[in-house]
Image 1 (cartoon, rainbow, N blue to C red):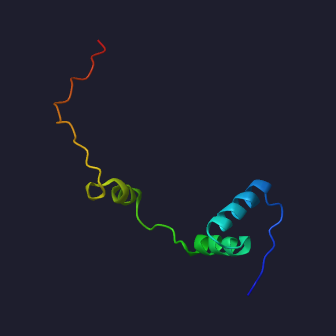
Image 2 (cartoon, rainbow, N blue to C red):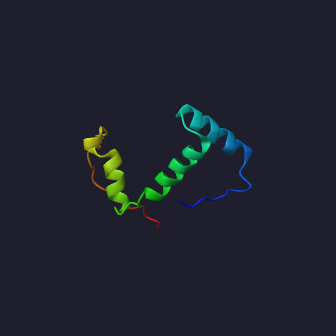
Image 3 (tube, helix red, strand yellow):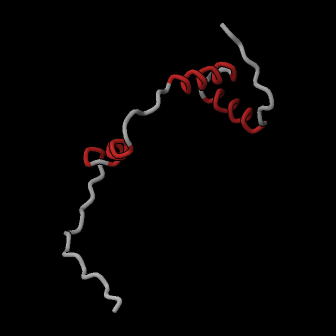
Length: 80
């Protein structure tokens, strides 16, 4: 197994890591390992923006918007 050293870590980050580790019943070192493991395990999304938005806000996810009926287009302004 490899090891790394992280220098210049903000005190606030260390404090939050310690609190998160304690809340999860783990050491700071184990918490940091899990965070790093999860971060590099994620794969970027391959969908396009429309499919990502639809997956979050589509009718199968509890959001269904009523669209107003379409009306005829207005006459364009005249600059005479």
